[in-house]
Amino acid sequence: MEPGFYRGGLWARDLVEISEDPASLSDGNFWAVISTYEGAHTFARFAEVRHDQEEAFLAHARDQMQIWSPPEDEWMSSLSQSQYLDAVQEVREAIARGEVYQINLCRVLSTKSVNSNLLPIFPKLLSGNPAPFLTSIELPKLSISSASPELLLRREGDLITSSPIKGTAKNRDGFLEKDHAENVMIVDLVRHDFGSLCKTGSIHTPRLLAVEEHPGLVHLVSDVQGELKADISWAEIFDSLLPAGSISGAPKSSARQLISRLEVVRRGPYCGAIGWVQGDRAELAVGIRTFWIEHETDGSLLKFGTGAGITWGSEPELEWAETELKASRLLSIIREREIQR
Image (cartoon, rainbow, N blue to C red; front, side, top):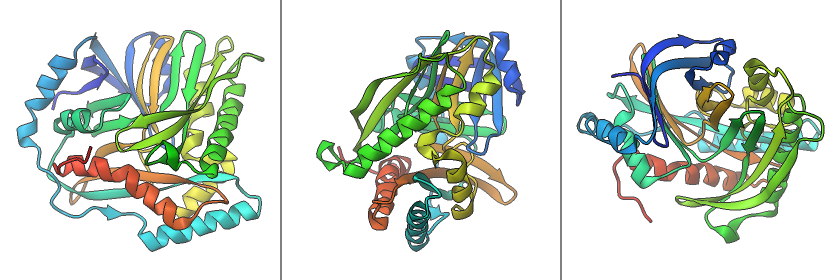
């Protein structure tokens, strides 16, 4: 499969090099970016970058659809329902002790795959689950198809924006009080993360608790903006913003420690960063609603992550149901089942 990157009409081809060093991004070239939740970076530089390529890219992807084989085995979850419910209760107890205020508790689904890449499912996601940051990445050792709705970072010169999502419901009337509290808490965390990067007094919140409709569900979304200080490096930006507060928790360091104890597998690209950098411009999405293929010694595994934000007011069964809601539509698309609209 030819390496490439695609998002929103932008199609990058002709892979030149792959780097793990954030300093590489300062050369002004176009780089595809994949950062895992655990902090491993993959930067891919492409020589050919074209815009307004949606029709050409979809034709390219549809040529591969005939070789797509939907998963035949059941999806296995890294945490069973009972294990997830117990973990939610452990988080609530940690909150009661004052160790954390909120965390995002995730599980990773996996199934055997005979496919070596995910390019054929991109048109399926576009038609069945359109998303603001729908992305396809094909690299020699990595295949990703992401339908992320969440902006981690948009950079336009010195202006940076992050749009954290916290709060999920089936419709506009389904939000709970804890959804609003979670969103405000994560906005404060993002403002704190921006604090080491941005000029004093420049950080503001132009949008708070807006409702965004997405296929099959609705989210609460806010915007945080700030103006970068002089000479801020990409390494500093990644160190400050990753992992995103919306998929880790608050305080971030304590939340990450608790997550590492409760979750039994690494998240990988799920909950990391997926996007592109070119000079002083960038668009990085949080790697949620993301499929990826990992090649194991005994075959390839197709993986997908799902999670929910846990607060003191969380009910374990409802949090499990939220993880099911976030996954069900996308898994149905992969299985080629009819989507309920």
